[in-house]
Length: 424
Image (cartoon, rainbow, N blue to C red):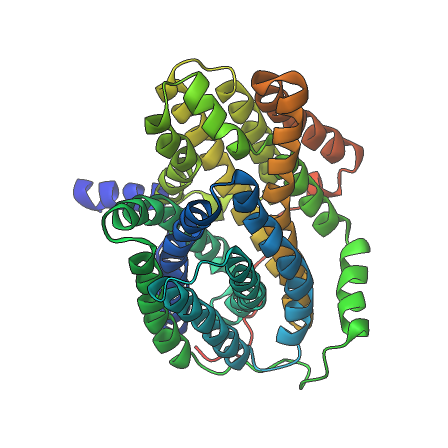
C-alpha cells in the first residue's frame, strides 16, 4: 500500500462513515428525513415570530411548546404501536401527508392574514401529532434497510444531518422571515415536503414481520412492559432524561444574552452552539462504530455533556460559552447514536415501532421539561445556579444511576448477525 493510500485509509477511519448511503432504500429515507428536518426549521422559527406579533406576549409563545408536547407523548407511543402492525412505508407516507396538510394550513392562514393565536396552537398540535407518528416509523424502518453492523454509522448520519438542519435552517429562516415574512417560511417548509413525499413514495414496502395485527392498548402495554423488563433500555432512557431535564439550558439563553453577553446578537450563537458541536462530532465520527463497550461510552458521553454545559454556565466570554456548549453538543451526538443503536439492536423488529415511540416521547419531552426546570430554578436562585448547577447535577445523576445499576455499563456491541430478509 502506498503512502497516499495509507493516508486515505487513515482519514476514512476518523471521518464520518458513509457506507449506509450505498443502500438505495436508506438513501431515500435519508433524503426524506433531511428535507423534512430542514423545512421544519422554517416553521419552527415562523410560528413563534407570528405568535408574538399577534399577541405581544411571551406567555402565548410559551404555549407553543405545551401545545406540541401532549400530541408528541400520546401519538408517539400509539404511532409506534401502529408502525409495528402495518406496512411502515404506508404509515410514513400517511403521516408525512398529514404534516404536509398542516403546513399548507399554516401557509394559508398567513397569506389570508388570519389573526388567531388559538388556530396557531391547533395547527402546531396537529403537526406535532403527525410527527409523533412519522418519527418512530422512520427510526423503526432503519434496521430493515441497513445491516446490523452499519446501524451506528446510519444513526450517526441521521443525527449529524438533523443537527446540520438545526444550524442552517434557523439561520436561513431568520433571514427569510425578516425580509419576506412568515408566509415565505411556511412556503419553504411546504416545498420541502414535496421532496419528502417523493422520496417516501420511492421507498420499498416494509411490512410487519409478524404478519400484521391491530394496534390496541394491549400492544402499547407490551412495549412498555418490554422496556420495564429490559434494564439496558430502561437505564439508557433514564440517563437521557437526566441529561435533558437537568442540563438543557436553552430557556436561559435570552436572559444570559441580554445580561452577560451584550444583547440579541448573542442569542443566535447560543441557540446554535450545541448543534454546531454535534455536526462537527458527526463529521469526525469514523470511530463510533468501532467502539465495543457502547454502554460505557454512552454514560461517559452524558457525563461530558453535563460537565461541559455546566462550565458554559459559568463563562463570561461568549466564545468560551459557545465552545463549551459545542463540546456538550459533540458529547450529545455520541450519546444519541449509542442510545438509538442499543435500542435498535436490543429489541426485536416486531417491537421496534413501539419502542421508537417511547424514544420519541423521551427525546421530545425531556428538553421541554428541561426548559421548565431551568426557568423555575433561575427565578428562585439565579441564572448561574440554574445553568451550572443543572449541568453538574446531570453528570452526577448519570454516574450514580450507571454505578448503582451496572447493566448499562456492561452492555457491549453484539457480534454481527445475519441481516433480515429485507428489501435492499
